[in-house]
Each structure stands twice: as C-alpha cells, then as structure tokens.
Length: 185
Image 1 (cartoon, rainbow, N blue to C red):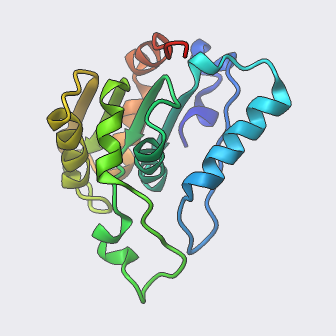
Image 2: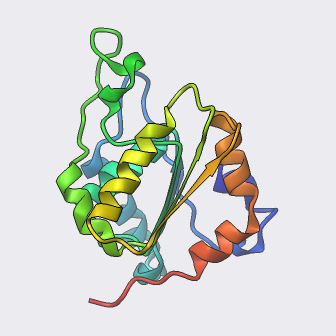
C-alpha cells in the first residue's frame, strides 16, 4: 500500500528514497526503533536532504506517525497520517489480554509541539477499524495548540481502505507534500 505501490504512477515519488517498514505480528511501533531506522538510512545513503524528510502511514502506520511526532515534532518537513490515532488502547481489538506486545508511546502533550508541522490527515467516515473520532481528537489537539498547518479531510461514506486509496491516489496530496521544507536549524 501507499508510496511503494505508486512510484510508477507519480513522478514526484520516483526520485525519492522510500522506507516502508512493517511491524512484527502482535507488536506495535516503537518511536526509538523508527527513529533509528530513518537515521540509519540517512547515514548509509549520505545523499538525503534532511530538510525534506516526509512521513506518511496508514492505519497502524498512522498511529506510528502520531506517536513519532508527539516525541519529535520537528523531525519531518511534513506528515500525512491516514486513518490512524494516538493511543492504541482506544481500540477494543488492541486491549489486553487480546493482544500482547502493544505499548502506548503517544504523548498528547508532546503533540502540542507539532503545531508548526505541516500535516494533512485523512479518515473515512465509515471506518470500522479505526473510528474517525481518533483522528478528530488529534486534529483538535493541534488546533487547540494554535496550529495553522493542520488539514483534515474526512471522506464521506468511505471505509478504512478507501481512505488511504483516495488520499494516495490524489495528485494534490503529493504536490502539497513535496512543496514542504523544514527550516534549517
């Protein structure tokens, strides 16, 4: 799903280094592992513009993004989380003892620091896997923090899969993403 599947369809993606990690079964994203992975790719390649690091993910990957930016709000130039959320334990299917290996690393207070991050999030109104209220709560945190850089597109009548299919198939999403640059520190 997502960018690896679309490299041949969108010229903007063709010149990118795309990293698409998969989480182990009965596990959850760990912020330190994700950060180490991205840092390793940057170090090994040596040709990546660190002012143009972008992140996108869907479903559980969307949760990973929200957690990551709640710890490192200035790391990426822009983010596109799709049908994700903050606390994975808000989902009944993730509550112990049903699943093991899941840990909540999302910090709501940390998300306040991401108010300057350009972020465009998407969610289907008929999502039965991750309720749309999960995205609505996170958008509200950013809005309350004073963000003027958050965009939220709810897809009316769309379910879980349709949300990311619609978002990723939209050429405007990629134009928006690649127009963003992180300020030099």
